[in-house]
Image (cartoon, rainbow, N blue to C red; front, side, top):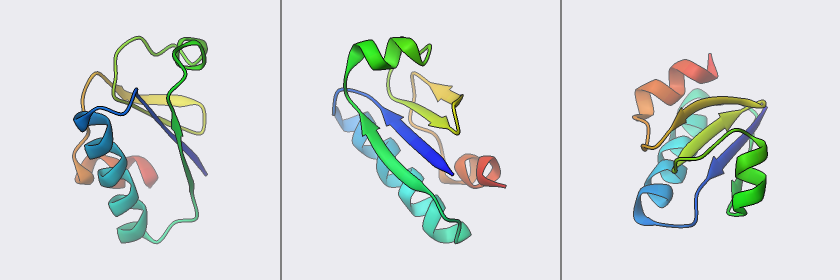
Length: 76
């Protein structure tokens, strides 16, 4: 599973990353979590509002930091 956290590195982006990492640990899934800070790459993913979470190429949320329970649901 590939998870991308998109954002320039603001406080909300950091919060989103920590939330995703906590959810991955809680669910015990194998996932690679990477940070995307390049705005051109974000645009290619269809993201124009940050922070955003992309799981296996699908945008799960944009413009806000998700709750851990939401992320755990997305992870299955």
